[in-house]
Image 1 (tube, rainbow, N blue to C red):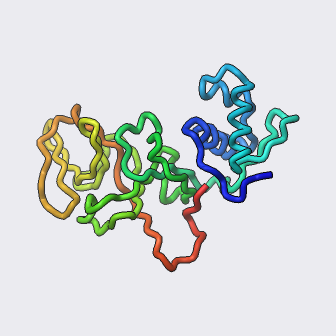
Image 2: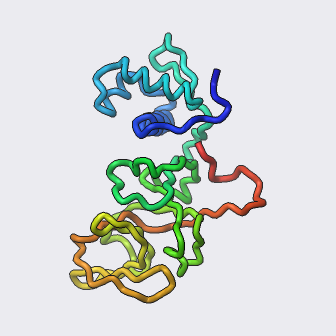
Length: 221
């Protein structure tokens, strides 16, 4: 019996589920157990099967163990015009590990809003984006991109010395300036581009009003 409300996932379970969703959108059929194992460097098909069973037990999949691709993903919009993006409780300090335990959920967004699977959302804390009218608890959508392609004055999420923050980006000859988005005009530059890692550009804000009906372009899975 499936859980009425899907339970939270471990990091590897979430990565496998995301891979299955992406693969299904691209190919119209599910990856095999062997393909999942190859994607994540898992040599044992038994181990992959155990991860799939955990996803089923937690209410995210339905399985037919007699078939190699006998899996049905539950509660996911597979429309090719949408993309699933991870949403974090705050900006992760290290994006390379997938955000770790900061992951809250995934949202399915229209591709006109979120251009690719590389986009992600982060919940805003305190006044860190007050200058943009963004309030604590709002989510912002961040789109990764090449630093040289970002326009002056755009708002970015960045990491410096293991700490993440937001700032308005200005690129000068050989250095960067990052102006505060907390409402003041404090500048953190000049900065050596090699010492700052720009995680992406803030392209949208998501805010749910207390009396708003459910549904629409953003749906959790």
